[in-house]
Image 1: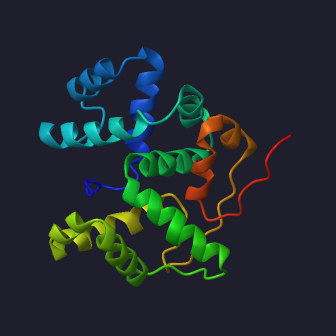
Image 2 (image 1 turned 90 degrees about the vertical axis):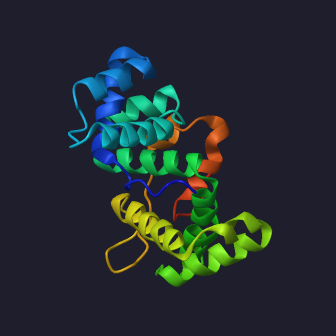
Length: 194
């Protein structure tokens, strides 16, 4: 539940992915990003926090996905970053599958804060530790999740769910054992090959 730092981090992710494609080493990426202030933050502590968050997300991507993140279209990049967020945060992955996708498939094309609240309450029945989250923190989590959804272009400013259209290149980049990842998107499941 520590995803309250920022949003999708598109620009920052592209920067770190490009450095990683040159160096192939995450320690080198972190050192270069911080030493040269590549994230253009005002303070070192902000740069460290954002760098740590982005690296955690990017480390969930395989080599093909990282290559596509560096060389893909803006939409492919956004979708890959959404996948990385879902891989990092089980709560968001569950929300994506159980609420975002199911609402879309059920022809309910709107998504509101109440949907998040209802989901959160249901999850807290199985995970009592969620009850320890303060209301202000819960509101921040909700706000950041909706921001990420908008930045990934999965949700419009007026809370309408956008159908995802994953490119063949993106589907090919997702590892074969990662077919669950397509369930993070508001779309029907693609047909299996073969």
